[in-house]
Image (tube, rainbow, N blue to C red; front, side, top):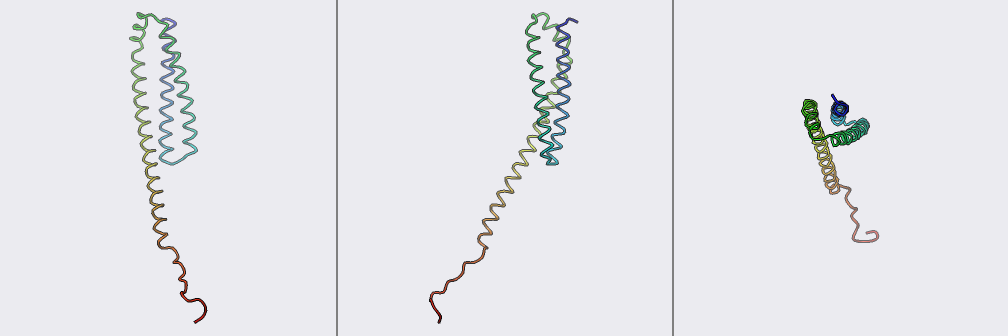
Amino acid sequence: MTMEEKMIKNLLEKKLALLEELKGQLQEQAKAVDEDDEPLLSRILDAKEKVIESLIKDDRELDKQVAALDEKNRVAIANRLQEIGIQIEKETEKIAEMENDCEKKLMNERFDLFEKMKSLKNGRTLLKGYGSSPRIKPKFKGSI
């Protein structure tokens, strides 16, 4: 195994570990959304952002390493590390699905909140009709 292949393998293994970490954070995020725990959700989103930044940085490094290889070595290394690539692809698909599910939950909560606000507004409008009746002013001034 060449030095370049070792570096690429290490980067791919690190990416796989970061994807696992991200998947765990998404599970926590879904739980925080279900429990309506905004402070926890905020902390999880901050942690996810850091993991994603690390993934982006590692992807850039991986691109540099692969670009430095000639075509023959690139194909040979890709074939030898194909299993890690498949694992990364599966994890990425799971993460995308989890993220979509979480987004749907948030959109449903947003819709429910909008409906509640709308019904409160309608209720307030209806209550105005039942408010205190205006005082009936006498048509004649003075005492009768």
